[in-house]
Image (cartoon, rainbow, N blue to C red):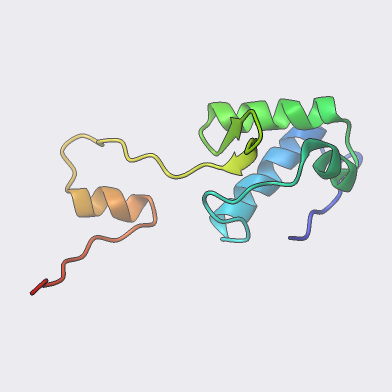
Length: 108
């Protein structure tokens, strides 16, 4: 995965990081459930401090785009989409909004 460094003078670093991760998930460059590199490595590749990276990851976690786990199998992961009931819309419409599809198949 190519990680572009933050551009000085192009806005707040944490906002640039959030926008990059948003775009990477939206375009499929980062898959749902994929583990991000460790904080030290990711901060170095982005050219920012760990504090700036943590600020961005905290915002993304609040928005539900990433999840963080502590422990041996911990790390920062691209979050799985959450299915929330959206009023009276049909399930197939709700799934389509999440980029998923419904289907049926005959089992014999």
